[in-house]
Length: 124
Image (cartoon, rainbow, N blue to C red; front, side, top):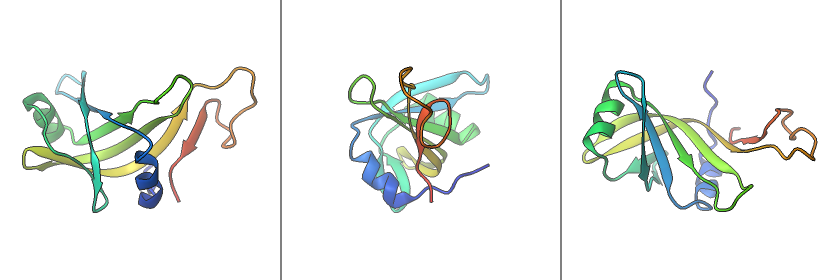
């Protein structure tokens, strides 16, 4: 099930992170991961330049994931699922779901959302 992304919240959240990892899969369904600097433009995450493997993977399997790692241990990771499309030298990723996620603290109760991990969905 797709979760509608609140793009205003996503735009505000991305500024707290530096770079992201773009995860694509090849025809063998092995993950291919590269570091990228996506920019939120007109509701999509635009990546200026990608290599041949990433371009080939996204063309054959457009469902991709972007992962922004936390700045410090114990911080939140931003995870955005989306659909990739060719954008010249790069890719344009239309977000379909986003979440802030981190390992649960064993000394605390369940998160506010009730999941076993400490996660914050970014949706309306």
